[in-house]
Length: 83
Image (cartoon, rainbow, N blue to C red; front, side):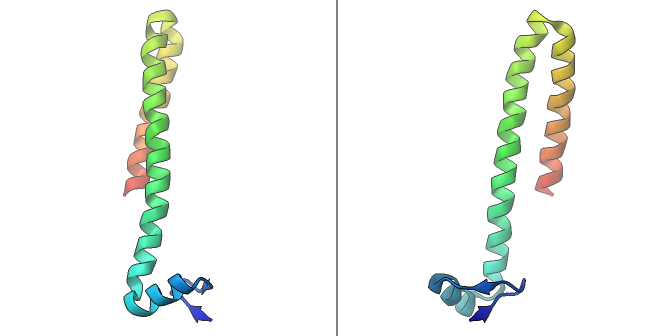
């Protein structure tokens, strides 16, 4: 078995071949996939909170203010994840 830079064993033949020819690039691509997953997940959550906030500002302003705070925190968290 071939060991990658993190210490995990590359069991898939495609991973072994990619690691042999690309080296550290495979490790960077794995990080990008994890980053993209969490970035889009939290970004969509922030967008849903923003839509809900706009509706709640018209119906119940106090809940709209709470959701505005939650939307802002989620957007800050998205920026934190993207760094």
